[in-house]
Length: 591
Image 1: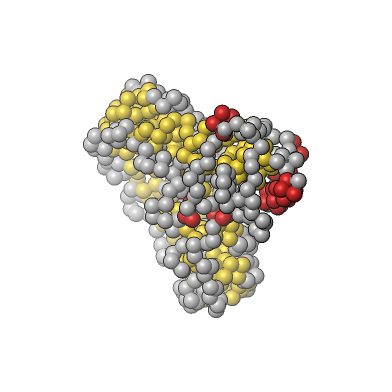
Image 2: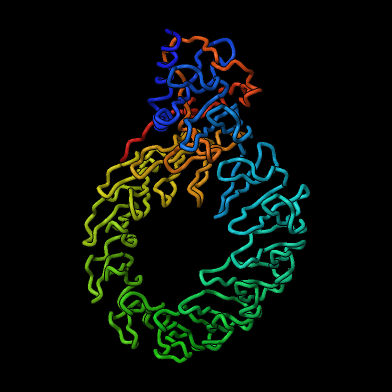
């Protein structure tokens, strides 16, 4: 009886406090993951599941175990293999090796993955191999039925969801099929073309480059002779490849097009010249007008019929911006602003200036110094800064005095004094990156307070989820911080990638350390995808060790229960059971 009491106390001590789902498991079927603290005998030091009576319902045979889900299954780990069991301890998913590297799903149900050797296959969203790793390389299915895969000779083709080649491997490279059922492939000689899902050529491999589709679904394509055209979503030539260059799309789907003679016009996706190519230069359409240069080297503005509605008279001209104002450079070399009629709203009196923003103000320079002007052309902040950037979402703008940066308000008052060696703009939310006098990067808030002290070699931009990659000065270790500067991933990794489109972050401990460790943006390990390492039971504390016999009377093989896997080495233990590989760097003093 005493043994059972100790067992139940140990199970509660090890499994209950740190596991939010363990309580749900107990309330359901009454099975709690627990570790046998024994030093000798079957199951010593391994995990199993204890019932409400304190007895082993599933014998300890795992290196780690997650609580049971509401569906009655639980993920367990055996060394570097994972499996899923039911409440009887039988395999629902047979043990499989964790992938060494997992690609992105890209909207599909399977993701490319590399085994811990050099072979690639596909895993499902549970992290289980759906297509065994037998390829030289794989790329995502996306929303299509076929995915690029390379054979052992690294010739690329396309496989179906059963892992069979539906399009034989005959290409030097291949990209996933798009929504229109076209895939970009490359043949010998770096010639590119488009094929359909039947493997037939839609666009023969005569192109040297094909861009990804733009926002309107069209793709710029370049032939072997360097001539450029435009492909539609079905691979048909919307604009024949006869042009020297093609830029856009701009307003109303119009492209800037340059002929082989060096003359510029504007063309639509039907191949019709909106503006005949008779000009040395034409800019982007905005609000129905486009700046253009005539043969005399002066700029005016054309309408969508190719007629100058503002006659050429400027040394430089830019598209219409906020408020219908356009920035121009007059013949005296000074910058001013005109309206749609060509009349000066702000006389040309600045060395340089930028377009007006929605705040009805902009930066302007006079005699080498920057300030702020309003719509009337008056100085709202006099020119005194050596540099002045656009205003951030929080109402502050980066400004430089001499060689030091700070942040100013709309009145030109420093909200953050110019003491920084370098700084970056404030994002839509959270602190800004900044470098102190000593060269370390940190994070400052709008009051100029260090949210994260300047102790890093670098800090990346924040991801949409609000995390940023940092590199420490001690051994160039990688980690991640949140918007408050707190570590969500401690800087103990040799390398960490920037967040993927699926918000996963891949990190690597050592040069040849596989599998890679994947985290979500809260710093929880997510490999394999269905196994939550944050739910693993921590090492036991000061609990008396003892041998706990399994309740079952038949061998594990007869019940489908696994035999214990190899004990993990120190390097193989999950992060929750290891000490950090590197000490937290000492903060430098902010100047």
